[in-house]
Structure formats: structure tokens, C-alpha cells
Image (cartoon, rainbow, N blue to C red):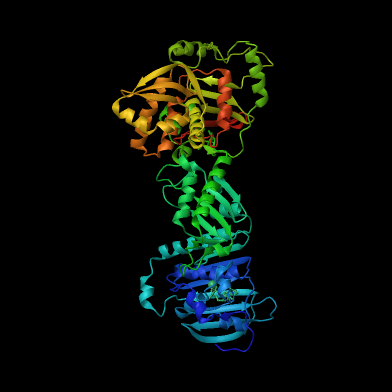
Amino acid sequence: METNIETKIKLLPQALANKIAAGEVVSRPESVVKELMENAIDAGADNITLLIKEAGKTLIQVIDNGGGMSEEDALMSFQRHSTSKIKDYEDLENIMTLGFRGEALASICSISQVEMKTRRPEDEVGVCIKIDGNEFKDVSKVNCDKGTSIAVKNLFYNTPGRRNFLKSNQTEFRHIYETFVKSAISHPEIRFEFYNNDELIFSLKPGGLKERLAEVFTVQFTDSLIEVSAENSHIKVTGYISKPNFTKKAKQDQYFYINNRCFFSKALNYSVYTGYDDLIDKGDYPSFFIFIELDPKKVDVNVHPSKLEVKFEDERPIFGFIHNAVKEGLRKADLVFSVGFGKEGTAEDQDMAFLNPDRKNKVSNFNNSFKREAAENFTDEIKREPIKLDRQFYKEEIQQEKSANIYSIFDAVKKDDDAENEETSDINKLPHNTFEHKRSDESRFNVWQFQNKYVLCQTETGLIIIDQHAAHERILYEKAVLWLESQSPFSQQLLIPLYVSFTKIDFEIFKSLQNEIQYLGFNFNLIKNESIELTGVPSDIKHGKEEKILQELIDQFKEYEMSLKLEKRDNLAKSYGCRSAIKAGDSLKYAEMIQLIDDLFACKMPYVCPHGRPTIIRITTDELDKRFSRT
Ligand code: ADP
Ligand code: MG
């Protein structure tokens, strides 16, 4: 189309047009929806409506209130390689708009009947253009709202082969739905509406990302998300990821955006998974909505006509950055398992699992898997507010312990346990009635041990229950990782060296790990006949257990190697954590419990043991009040 009037839309020079990834843009109704929505967003609209009929096969219409076009531009827009978004190669390298290829409208109008109405805010009247399979049928002045409306009718009407290739309405609708959702998430500040056969599917109010997600998905789903946010001078990453126990069995609801453009990347997906570490099982997938902001020069969006793939100049730092952002987000989030009551408050829901013997099996399942099923079974929720420990009380308690006023609220229970545990407990030889205090009005108990297995602790909002073994495992695991990395362990020298012998196989393993074992804090000399002379051990290892723990460390290492195929150091750190940790059945002194709690909360990931089981469960006072019908 030749015209003398100055247009915003220009034909791309041939050489530049050739640089644009070649290929067909329109393969199904969804691709038309995508292109039209992208154009509306690029036009600066803050109100976009999508209407489809018969899954887009008979009608796809997008109405926006963006900048509109002059008549000349409107005519020009249907030419192949005509675009207002780039002029030269430099622009191609600096793309911030969704479109740049100048091909969509040309492609769309060649395989359908198009009616465009458009008006710029500064124009009195708009223009209406009708095209049938590339042929202009009518161009006329029209009174219309500012912005642009493009209706695409009877897609592929002139290419029956391709029309027959379309899938069922249900399938085509699903594709459109997903594309709509992607766009809606990318711009929560834009109001979106979506009608299918005159039925309103979505009416999304402008707002923040969280509100948008709550509207598109559910409030419950959105509440289960953790925020991620990280930034340096090159890159900014923001968004949300799902909590570990809300993972899915399929790769669902995983969205990456680069400069607000949705894209797929297997490698970056993987960087998110690895950020979860042990928090999710193999075969479970987190949901995420991750927005990357990056200098457009550093990313090539011109890889494929669908513009769904992007190529980063250097992917590794981005991979690492996202990995760390996810890790950090998880670390900051309060992942403590909270035992709650069902929202509906039915009798069944109010069964507090751990108080009800019938639920025992489920309880053990709950303890064994920090997973969604458990969360669903018990309507357990992971709550966001941070745990605040009653520090003031600790201090008082410690003081009291020092002055050795002894009285226990669990006297009876404890006496029995102590008798049983006299043999098994390896926690020093100090008196066992450790956490026992004078019961008086001023003194309050806020940390105590239950069944020699759990440590209960009062917090500002309720009660937390710590699995002493899992917690200590986490603490020792993180210490071990640190030692292995820094290679500067602390060890305590043994007064009298110990001689430890291994089987031939174990000795081979021991030798292959000897550097790492030394980093953990074991000092030894190899002597002949599969034996070592042990002269020092890590300071966490209790006197009298040195040989046993070393042997168990090797056994555990073998087991993990067989079953989990862990990387050598991670395996060793996990084995060390598992074998050196206090066990269920070990009686703890008050000061030891305090130490355990302090060390646990100093961990990078205090809420799960190295195998992903929870270390802490919370019951809030509110929930107890509810249980006792106090509210
Ligand atoms: P591209 O988006 O790659 O530039 P298109 O074929 O999708 O190519 O559109 C061609 C041109 O038409 C765009 O560059 C833009 O100037 C104009 N255009 C298309 N849709 C709209 C719209 N909804 N509002 C304003 N201008 C539009
Ligand atoms: Mg476009």
C-alpha cells in the first residue's frame, strides 16, 4: 500500500525482515488470541476484552482502549513486515514490546475475515476496515471508542485443510484459556475480561500480582505461595513460588516472564527445582510465577515465531540467580507445619489428629511426609507469621535452673521415663530431672520435653513441637556441610586414642572418604589390618559413642549411596547428621533443649530435616481456644 502521509507503522527493510525468525505465526485459534492480546498490551491499553465463539473457530475479538491507529497506520498494519515497534537492527536488540515482527495481522487477515475498528484519542472519528482473506472489502469512517477492536471471523475458512486440523472445541478452548491467563498474569495492572459464547469467564480487576493470581486461581492457592525477590545491578527476579507441601504431581502453573513476556525454559525450571533442595520429592513439581527483568540486549526473543522461547546471552548466572532467589525465599518463609482445624469446623475436621488414636496411621503418615496429602488430610496449613519465641521466659528459666529449684509438671511421667532411659540415654551423666522447676506463680514453664522425643516450647502465638532427632539432624547436617566446604572443622582430641577396625569393604569406603571425614572433625591415623587410630572427634559426638558413630556413619553412607545416589559430600553430611544426632528416647536437659531450639532457628532451613520431614509443628493458641470452644 503506497501512501504519502507520514505513518507510524513502517515496512521493515528486507535485510532486517530476513533477520526475523521465519515461520508461520498462526497455527490455531490460540495463536490469534495471543497475537491480538499482545498488540493490545503493546498499545498501552489498561482495559482489554477478549470474546470468543466456538473456541475461537468462528470468532475471536479483542477490544482495547489503547492508543489506536490513524487510518493510514490501520491500513498499513495488515502489510507483512510492517510494524511501529522496531525500525532497525539496534531496535531488534532492545525489544521491550511483545511484538516486533510485523507479521501477525498480515498472517491473520490472509486466513480469516477481519474487521478492525480503531480510533486514536486525538481523532474525532475512527476507521473501520474489513478484509476477507487478504482482500480489502471496505474502508469507512466510523464512530467508535478510542482504542482498537479487531474481530477475526471464520478462521481458516479459506484453508479447509487447516480448519479440519483443529482439535475439539474443548481442546482449543483450553489453549486459549491458558494464553489468556498468561497475559493476565503478566499485566495485573490491566483490567481484563474474557467471554466465551457470551458467557463471562473472567472479569479481572486491575491490582497487584497477588490479587491477580487470587482471581485467576484461588485465594487458597495464592495464600500458599511464598514471595521471591532478588536483585543486583544486572538482573531483578520477583514473583511467587509454591510452598513445598503444595507441590503438584505435574508441571502445572509454572510461569516465567522475561521483561513481562511469558517464555519456557527447561534449564530455568530446573534452577527452581534445585532451589527447593530436599524440600520436595522427585516427581513433585512446584508452581511458580517468576518475573525476570534484564537488559533486553542480554536476551534474544527472536528465536522462534511464537516468541515463546528466549535465548540468554549467558544462561548460567541467571540460572544461579534464580536458584538462589528461590532458596532465599524458602528460607525466609515460615514453613512451620501448623496443626489447624478445618475451615468448616465440622466434627471430623476438628479431630485433632494427634489427640485421636484412630488417626494414628495418618499421623505417622503426616510425620513421615511433609507433603500435600498430609496437608489436605489434616487441613494443616503452613502459616506465614514468624515464630517469636518467648526469650524473656527462657532467661528466667535458665536462671531458675541454675538455682536448682526442682519440681516438674511432668514429674510422674518423667520419673518413669528416667528409669527406662537410665541405660539408653547418652546425654551426660548429670541428674535426669533436669527440666524441673519450682511450680510457683512467678515461674512459668515454656520449654519441656515430651516422651523423650519431642521438645515443646511456648511461643507468642501458641505452642511449637520440635522433633528432637529431626531438628538435631538438620543442625548437624548444616554444620557438616559448612565444615566440608570450609575444610576447617572443630574437633576435640581424645585423651586416649581409640582403635577402630573395619571390614575390608568398609575400610575401602573409609579410605575413599578420609579427607572428608577429616574435614568433619575426625582425626585419625590409618594403621594396618583395616584399622585406624582415632585421636580426635567432632565436638558434637558424645564421649563413649565415637567408635559406634564412625561405624554407623560408614553404614549410613553406604545405604544412602545405594538408595538415594547422593553426591559424596552431601551423602556424608546427611549420614553424619543422621548418625550423630540425638535420638528419640534421649532425655534432654533444659539447657540442651534451649541450645537445640537456638541452633535450629539459626539454621538456613530449620523447618525440615535433611530428608524433607518436618522438624517443627505448631499449634496456635487460637486453635486450642477453638478446640476448647473458647471462641
Ligand atoms: P507487531 O506487533 O509485530 O508490530 P502486528 O502485525 O501484530 O505486528 O501489528 C502491526 C502493527 O499494527 C503494530 O506494530 C502496531 O503499530 C499496529 N497495531 C496492531 N494492533 C494494534 C492495536 N490493538 N492498537 C494499536 N496499534 C496496533
Ligand atoms: Mg503484534
